[in-house]
Picture 1 (cartoon, rainbow over the protein chains, first blue to last red):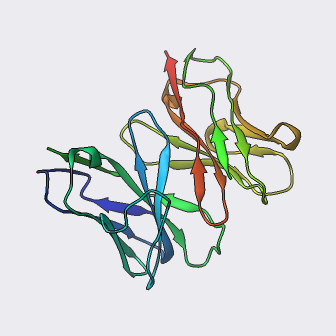
Picture 2 (picture 1 turned 30 degrees about the vertical axis):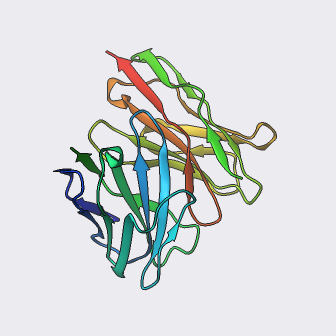
Length: 118
Length: 111
């Protein structure tokens, strides 16, 4: 149990276009989902925390108008990278916390999405 | 502010060698600590976690970690590594509502 999927696993796009990444909790309901960004040989950096039915909370330095997050249901959150630029190329990972686990419950991670902006 | 330091960036061991990966944290609240593993091409998986109680925590695949409060450390250990342990290992501390990760340690086990 506790499986999180991401789609697509890999995407290549042209500079200036927008890309949507989906994160789904397959066998549990997630009130909270998290979006991370991982640069090569670096740690995962939290971008934003997404709560179902409310606006996402963005970490300092993350542009909310560039990285649009929608958490429309208890099993789906989406991250849209708008007007993508080559410096947005990265590995984006989502995680989900079960609705029943409370505020400090375990997070389950998706497999990540490799974004390459040409 | 919370932070996690992993000083070993790349560790290379032969099979059957013992492993210890360092992790030091900084956090002023209740300490919840985690070790995650990322096998090549796969997603992050939880190895073990410490919330409270016995400071020596046992996880999956023979891994264990010891929480030493006085040293702000949560080092990961395994007595005898296998080739299949080759992966990236991340230490993390739970903040108020989310995880903060260290930079990771790449472990390469040579058969």
